[in-house]
Length: 111
Length: 117
Image (cartoon, rainbow over all chains, first blue to last red; front, side, top):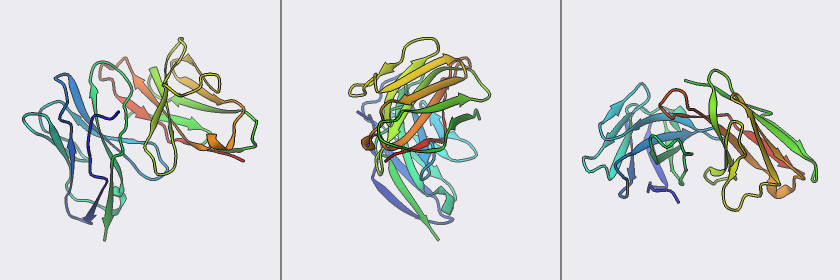
């Protein structure tokens, strides 16, 4: 079973920031938080991952709470092409095991 | 980022035939490859994990004799759906792990849409 809880859907206006929450209250010390997204009929695309510090790359920012029990993915300026299903996944960073996908959040960006 | 390709991208076959799907890592050595299946409006479901040169490990409920996985080289894994039936129609996605980088990143292919008539 997935170790994360995400809202099933969210809406965002084009140009605004999209903040996608994820709860992972049972996360253990060596587990990372990964975010992927899947645009319709395509393979999942890696977005970002982190252990305990906040992370930022060209696609998004990842904010992890101090107790690591939840995180937020931020898309700073959402575009129509960001419409996708976003998956928050917790995984042991060193085990090399498969990513296990939950139901994710369907983000709809509209103009 | 690393590139994973799948072939074919789409296949339609008759019930009872076998279909082979290829997954290739184009610019890295994939020590481990994963196969997922996704039904409409559902999430990805892990089918099996394969390490190069070893037999695949199948998830509970996945028939190993129906879904044959071969990972004979560090850049190629194949999934063969034997005696396909309409209920096997699905989106099949492979993923490859670059075990040499130390980052354990997992890269996904674009998926293969299988339709069994």
